[in-house]
Length: 104
Image 1 (tube, rainbow, N blue to C red):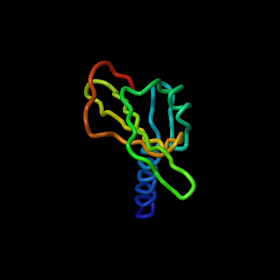
Image 2 (image 1 turned 45 degrees about the vertical axis):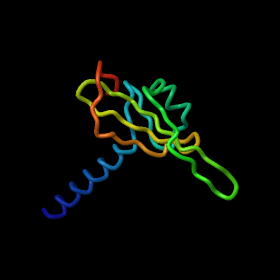
Image 3 (image 1 turned 90 degrees about the vertical axis):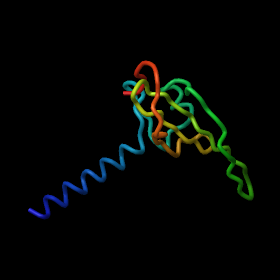
Image 4 (image 1 turned 90 degrees about the horizontal axis):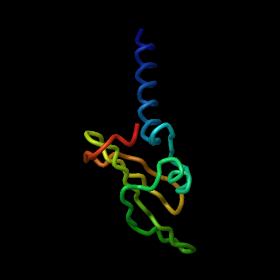
């Protein structure tokens, strides 16, 4: 019995981690590792975007950019973070959106 409870707990932990790395735009899903172009094709242009910082190494400078998607009234605004042209982070901002539902 304890083994089953542990397996169920592990399952829910894995599911919650997987969901944190993806974002639903209507009927489409984007995930970390996707390109910025794929995100724009699937989700449309962001409601707001900004350059957050730059990552500097000995050989290159990479732009860190944030795309904000307003998911609608009573739903969280989500920020998608890009390093260069690759999606590296997805998280809710903690603030609520407004207007019609946009993200399912």
